[in-house]
Image (tube, rainbow, N blue to C red; front, side, top):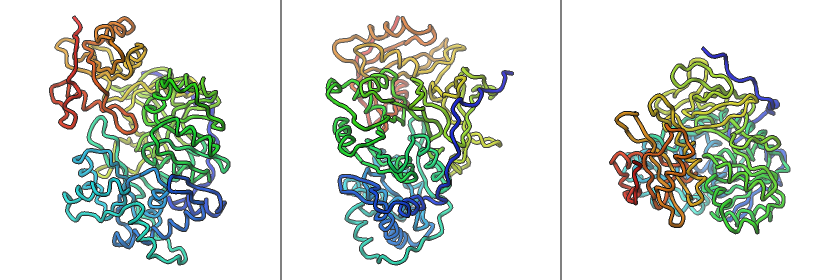
Amino acid sequence: MTEPGPPPPAVVRGPLPATAERLDGLVRDAARRHPDRVAVRGVSGAVTFGELDRLVSRCARALTRLAGGPGAVIGLTAALDPACAVAYYGIARGGCTVALVNPLLGDDELTRALRVAGPRVLVAPERVAGRLRDLTGRLDGPPAVVTLHQGLSGLMAREEDAAEQVAPPAERACVQFTSGTTGEPKAIVLSHRNLCVNAAQTAQAHGLDTTSVTLNHLPNYHPMHLNSAMCAGAEQVLCTSPDSADAIALANRHRATHYYSLPVRLARLAADPGLGGLALDTVRAVYSGGSALPVAAAEKLSGHFGIPVVQGYGLAETSPLVHCDLPQRSRPGSVGVVVAQTECRVVDVTTRAELRAGEVGEVLVRGPQLMTGYLDGPGPVDADGWFATGDVGRVDEEGYLFLVDRLKDVFKHGNWLVSPTEIERVLLTHPQVADAVVVDGPDEFAGSVAHAYVVVRGDASCASVRDHVNERVAPFQRLRTVTAVAEIPRTATGKIRRREIRDGLLGRPDPRNPSILSTREETAP
């Protein structure tokens, strides 16, 4: 039996300030403190905290009436638009539950999510409303589909600006689905307390206050960024352009202090020949999350802009943030230390014994932001409140967490535990490899072996890529095959769809992407 795990982090988060007890209370409190300050700025215009609070109350009455009263589930497509903030908090204020809908899912996955969540109303941008109407025809008792601008504005226009009437909150504040990259998406239930506490935890970890201006360069409006800025009274600037140069220009125009983006976008920016002509004038740190950002990309951007580029770690089940790197004491490759009121431990994947600092095992977390459970059950939480994340990592002597891989992605080669992500990092050191993924395939003698799929630049051969890796890794990590592909399938947040790739390797290609494995291949001797 090993000794108990790592000592407490060297940097201890301070106590959290008091926060709202219900989700829409974040808006109400911000409006009381600074009603005339800009809350959210988007392509459609800007709205102050005071205006937002009034719109939220109107929206609450309109959507609750349409849904048949408090307690209903109302679906919302989280578009990067100020109107989305109105709908999100309006659903909560009306005593209903918001179910976040990802329009990037395939038809079957999206239909399944709607069937599980059971919304009576769906609020969606005009560009996806038609598709949702088609899919809801597959459901029993199809929900009404309301467009985010014209439809919602029309409903709200019928409501009078009467004294605010706040319905008792629904037991469930939010239903959110996991990404489904390693299995079927799970429906997660989050309470008002989960989301409000994590808003305060995130605001503290990111150093947000009333002087902050956040630049959100994301494909969708993530509740973490919305709630944390609302909690802090910080202005939010929303950038819908996928071009990082546009996002940087917008950050400079509005004197942003915090820049939020995705690893896939930041990695492309680091490799962009035009990076030398870009500068961030007022941003104090760049924050990356959703998946791992390559260390080399983070270091290049940090060196170029002269500011920290840091990562955080969270899960849908934890509302989501549990760790965040420290801009003033950043550790390359780390996702940082725990946020306030949160604990972390690493356990052996087989014996479940707690491990010492530096040893690799499954990451467990505990804190008030932990979900109430899944719609179909409580989830992997033990009797002491520890949540098994399914991620493999290690914690150093000062409490910094380094993630290694997903537990479902690591595999055994003989008696050795192999991390695909570690091999991918070596693949990306090849000068002609633009992107890469490693999955396991069956082997008669070793159990499993590593196979790689790569996006190559120029005329690099698969054999040269394989040799580059196999000369630099341990014998149990060596690649059996390397296959060149046009692209690596990813989610909107940049997470690799390993399940689709692994199914293709085992002879079951994904019917939605049948060409993903139609490539040239060279097999190792």
